[in-house]
Image (cartoon, rainbow, N blue to C red; front, side, top):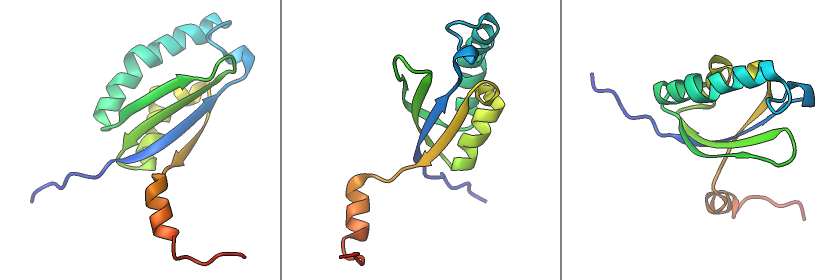
Length: 113
């Protein structure tokens, strides 16, 4: 049986943490985050077929935005748990739709007014 290639969807991950959980000022978190970013996350991204399109720290807040392509939202969720990100950040995962695709899909839909 041939394995079909699964289409990758685009997701935006928003992550944030409290000031005392920041690797900028907490040496324990800094050590843990270093392991997550340099070792765990890259390995899992490859294993789970997740492509990072962009990852940005929102200065000066304790907030990060990642844009990824992944097989499913569940794969992204599992990545956050298994990598260790969920140990020190809260996160939201947003499925996305390109604006042109959204506009075409709903152009003939009902309106309120």
